[in-house]
View 1 (cartoon, rainbow, N blue to C red):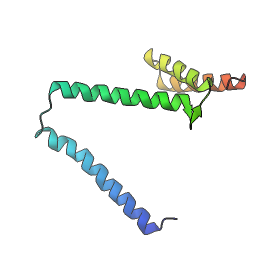
View 2: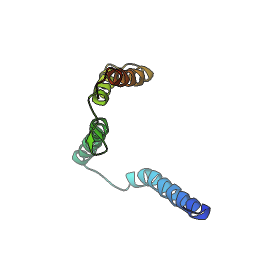
View 3: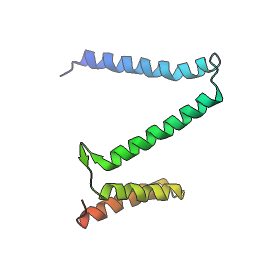
View 4: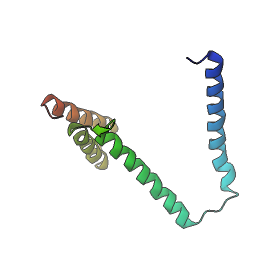
Length: 107
C-alpha cells in the first residue's frame, strides 16, 4: 500500500508533467515548422489510433472475444452518431441494444 506522502508526490509529478505538456504546445508552435504532409500524417494517425481503440474495446473482453452483443451495440451507437443523433440517445440506444441482445441470450 502506498503511503500518503508517496501518493501526493505521484500526483504532484503527474500534475507538473501534464501542465508541461499543455504549455509546450503553444510555446513550441511558434518555434517549430511542420510540413503539411506531417500535419496530415499526424491527423490520420490520431484517427487510426482512436479506431483501433474502439475496435479492441468493442470486440475483446480481456484475451477473448466479447460476444456479439457488444459489437452490435457499438454499431448501433456508431450509426446514430454518424446520423448526428443527440449524444444521450446514442449512448442509450447502444446500451439498450447490447442489453437487449444479452437478455435474448446472445453472448
